Image (tube, rainbow, N blue to C red; front, side, top):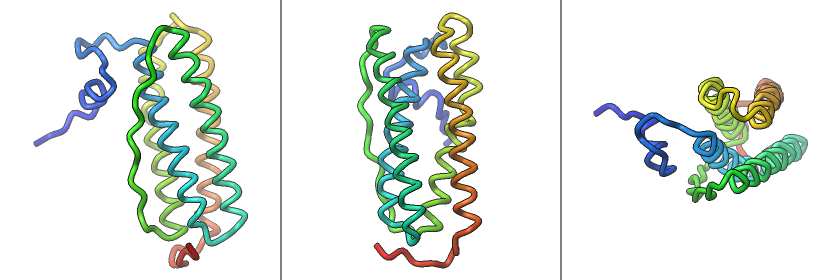
Length: 160
């Protein structure tokens, strides 16, 4: 059975299924992703073998939290309601695996961004500008996580 993830997101976020995706819908999806990634980065930071990586992941989580706060304010200002953010289950991954999962999260989010920008169009230039800046931040985060991955031992067990 093939899953249509975009349809699943529409139903999950209570979005119109007629294809008319609004800026609030895009922001709600981005909000959920940012909140989940914030929580996951905090969890992963606690499993880091290297203290400097723990600090870096906590810094990335704080930046994502600021993004989520801005997005939440925009959703409310546009008359939308904040979506529920389901918890993502923590895994017992080692430091290297945690970094790999963090990179995967960033990549998935970045892959959706061009489509989100296309949906918003020119109707909301402030939100489009934020999402473009957000894209640059995501690239920076991916590069930082990649750097940590390259410097990490994939077989190192977490001290947590």
